[in-house]
Length: 430
Image (cartoon, helix red, strand yellow):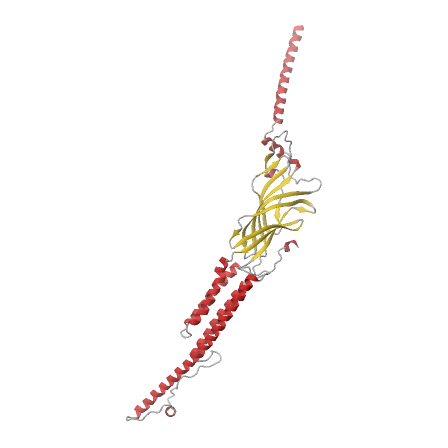
């Protein structure tokens, strides 16, 4: 009996010892798991907190710092008055829920997936199309709860660019930067350094970018733009100058023969091609409509006026009268077949014919030749007078046309360069 009891106690003690060893092993394994202090374990611990809402403490407004923002003008749509921009902003904020004890996790920073925690959203207030995207799938978190991230904003801004002085235009365009905020709750931006990159695109260049404020909650980037006038001057303005110069030089061509008229018609048709180019490049209308439209209209009027005057003077040189107000003069006598009329014409001849020996038929023939030569001489004198009159009118119009064109071009150049037109760029805030 005693022996059986001893055996039973021994088996019970053995089982208890085994269970104790097993529990110790399991407990040791849990402690080892809880004592994981690697960066990845730290990241998983922060991810498991499921922090997806904005940090909110004493009030519901959280400060978001933007220590650096890079601005880039991608293009300027002159036809539709659009400014396409790209902004890359470094954003920094603090979330106490993401802080950790560095005595347990001996790291000052850790990488977290960007879609596992709350991140602020920036947008352009006056943007027609605005998209914000993360520059990477990860962000950097620090032990004190500070989070650092980079976002990219692509914005198409409705900018009423002052094109009155085109192609010498220059203007400023605001790009309003704002974070989400409603009734005093949300986020508040604290802007730092602004830098412009790759400032030249197409016909426009970015001269300067500055942070400015309309109010404490209205921050914007004032972008100073100016057009590179070389290309539009060569493609638009210079051809008008050359065409009008060719029109002035065409007065050296004679009025007769039609060479001058055909040349002037060619110039008018060529100029209409530039009107189509201008219509494709410039907007239909704006507060400060480009004065180059008026310049093209005036140049077309001058060309058409020169062409019409040349046509009229050609008529004057030929017939001595205008098309609609004077009838051409008769040149020389007409043979009506009446014998009495012929005898009267012979009697009125200025040059008398010496009667020589011969038949009466020969004398009549000689008188007819004399009359024809006199009529031809009179017609030649009349033609010379018509040509002199046409040349005098042509020379007068030439000097008038040259002076008028010179004064116009000087005046238009001064207006294009010096005159300023003001545009209100902040209508979107009212």
